[in-house]
Length: 304
View 1 (cartoon, rainbow, N blue to C red):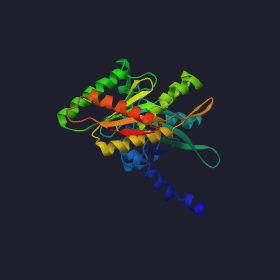
View 2 (cartoon, rainbow, N blue to C red):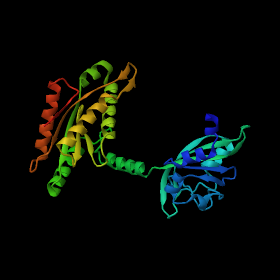
View 3 (cartoon, one colour):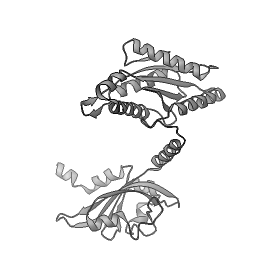
View 4 (cartoon, one colour):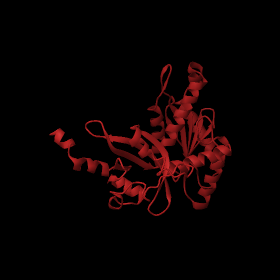
């Protein structure tokens, strides 16, 4: 029964059509034999418009990051069909509407039951958001606004964001939540493992916190092992849940170091900036609440 299930061509097409990534197969002449729904979404071309055509026939028109056309001489798919080596690359494809879309491409050869190459498989996904984020990081690096250890905003940038978000709150009458975070027993980590492992701990915490936040939130390193999360449009009940999630995720994170698994916890103080209150006063309150969490045993959140 299971063999019949996995030999079912319709099943595989259904699985592939439910992927968000673009997937297509070609023969050895690079004529497209299959084109999934993800490919339609990313490129704007329907399966009916591309099947039977060579992928270089004014369809994808891949270029590298420098804008060099790849389809007539440096095509990753053609190279894989020829040398049977899988490869990946960041490229731009041509969308049906005319614009270019940055993608990450992975290419593999397709073989028959005797091992002979009969075509190529290409999967790709849109990396527009990633490219935009990388560009923003480069710009912030140039302005010396990012912490070189953790990759989040440094103290200067964090102070700028606190001022900016505080002013925005006053103009719009919206809410603004703050979470002041300190890594527990960080000095002990440095003393036991050394400063390189201490940096690993800081990176792990920063990435865990950043990954749990919304796209319009902000995380900055305040100094040493302290971080501040700036959270627009959060009221106290939401802030409490949010801050507890941050604490729990850090507790469940770990990094592999030479001495074994590195696990740390955080103590946090969370507060909502009051109407008419200066943001600096709210930061001081969150800081004091964090120390209260420390005094009560660490690895906890105190709301105030």
